[in-house]
Image 1 (tube, rainbow, N blue to C red):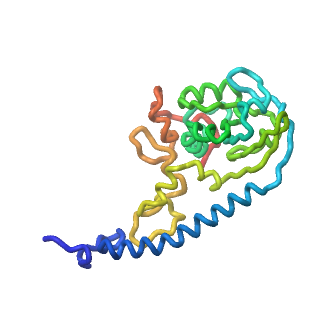
Image 2: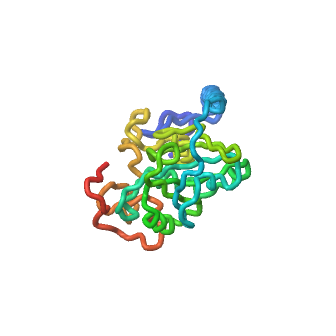
Image 3: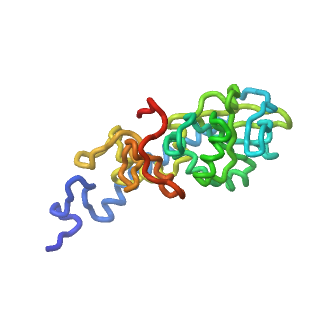
Length: 260
């Protein structure tokens, strides 16, 4: 037995209603009006960011990288603009015990060639001790520059888990913008794609139609076990780590009191 697209019998429980292409296009066009308004408001917010004041700080403050201590100004690599991601760090934790949210953000920022083409450099900063950080960077296969800002005051150091922008004018350095929380989602293209799908991110906070798959806690799929099952248990690790050489099931995350 076959059903026509506009036949009520074609409806699938817990799925979007089935309609013909013309009906779908009309609904799509209606949503597009709202999407365009959202885009224009995003443009206006970006324009407002460009009009924020800035804060000068000492760009000669030293941070530690693969070649030892270097002045923060070196991160600009001769360019005038710099974006950094501030990666949280758990001292003494093994690779699988590091922050899965920061791992997610850093994983989506593995290549900065298009930033570089626009005159913007990129680096990852973290409060970890350099020897631990270097081992983690090698394990993850990151190609972007990482630096330890342990003991360095804000705006270079300070709180982690932020995207932060800086401007250089000769030997002078300035903080221009910083964001965290969902503000970090701008670098995570996977979330943007998931937001386009009928099941979304699969998280409980989302406004989903009745009958759709039950949502989980936020970011529930950022950690999995060796079989790919989403879990935050003692055998889990951030998802991309399973592709790294030497990633095996573990018995502990190596940090007492680390609960989510």
